[in-house]
Length: 327
Figure 1 (cartoon, rainbow, N blue to C red):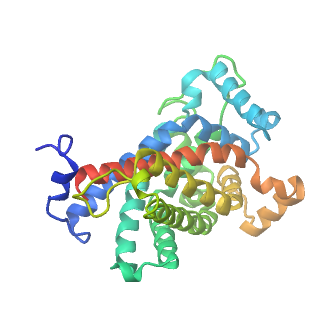
Figure 2 (figure 1 turned 90 degrees about the horizontal axis):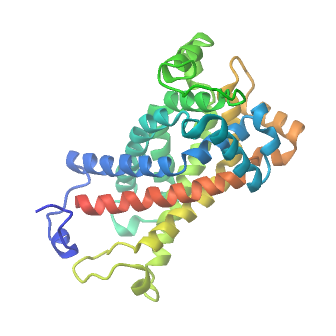
């Protein structure tokens, strides 16, 4: 019988799949990849604008600093480049996010199972460590694709009113961008900003998974459980209702973004400037000197608009696909 037609009771009666098995790894990887792709597609235009703000693209400096400016920036991209402009670099994003999200969620499940083999081992610190380690593992495998995506989003020519759509083989396509990155620094250039990414992913992934799990605990408190979970007598841990799962995921994104945002700004600057040898601390000091402390949080408002729905959708899809796949 298909999982699409099975009831919660029938799903609950299926044999438990060991988290150490390859079957569990494959199924959780599928759930993670689908979750990441769905979330990134939903916020792709906001992601494009945020990168342009963070990297101080000259064409968009006038729009920074307000939600109205963000809307105007999106409007300008659409006016000058159409839908292609709003999703420039998104093909690389999907290619990157599917393995990234799959590895991240698989790593979290496996690392969490190692540090928290049973309920008595479950602590806030172990949850945070599990999230941080899963983030490090996933970014190690997918960082070069992230650099290509950011460079494609940054190298816009939207001030030309007759720009042709970006394709994989155009001047600003995947192959051409990859060649330029390699020509300007070799393989090392594909890992520019990697140290800032690793340092940033520790608080981001750790805080994200910790907040999500903690929010689940709060939403499952006996006093409110009947309002937040799907009623089921056959499941030991019934899934949260859609609105409750979206709330838990959204909160995880908001808290994690605030904790790690300055390092994200530094990383974006390092990714788009070839040949820069500045350290993370040195570049951070320069940003503060030129733009003040607020320079480390430029684009944070759009970051919230982007990250909150992205995290909410990601966790919702992941939990629902896991449930459908019986894990």
